Image (tube, rainbow, N blue to C red; front, side, top):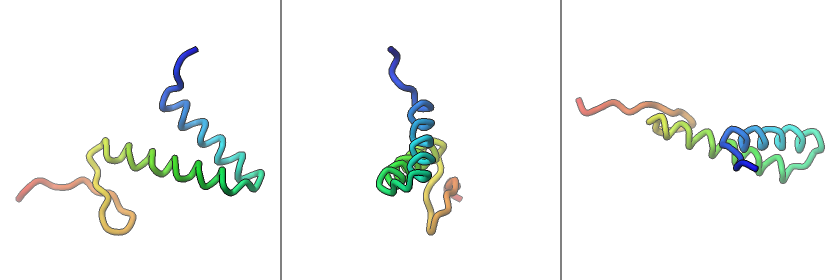
Length: 64
């Protein structure tokens, strides 16, 4: 059996998110939301984006 890929993990969390919302299972829903938010932040950092004020991500400019 192969190890789950990053995509498999993400898809599983999305499934958990939808199922827990439909069942009104708030702890599982919150857990899936936190994991997906952290995953998205990690991807953005990998692309060189920086979290600015508020909820905006931007690509920093070099020295002028």
